[in-house]
Image 1: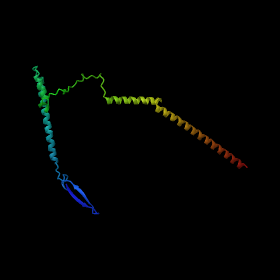
Image 2: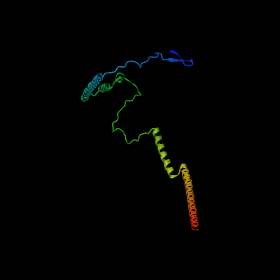
Image 3: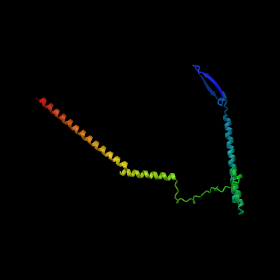
Image 4: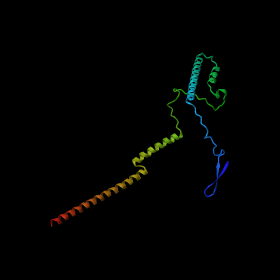
Length: 195
């Protein structure tokens, strides 16, 4: 790595390490090349033609497979082996695999699937369902006032109601007292004005 020494205003030396390429190394300053719209159009056309050609080949292969299946079978298992070998694709067709743990995926028909049999739930699903049911039970008991929290809430509400009633009575008494004082003062003024 290249080491540069920089001097600050107070003549203190500091060491700065630069990357290997120096100051102007790196990939960001290169000249960029762009594809022209004509080249892009040409590539798109080639791609469409290639796809169309592949689809035609697949359709032709499917028709030949149908005609071979319609021919009467000789009754031997050799023809089944040939069909299964032909169906294999990629590396699977090249390498023979003898894995006792590998189970071939068999597709089930709709008539074979048993709808009546209940599906086994996973542990997480069971726990989630139990959690929801427990919450519902708690809410029912809470609304009925049978839980500790509900009892505490009801007691708190009763205390608040009593305080509000007392405050309302006190306000009413004060209002009556003010009215009586106002009436007494008005009466005394009326007496004073008559004299």
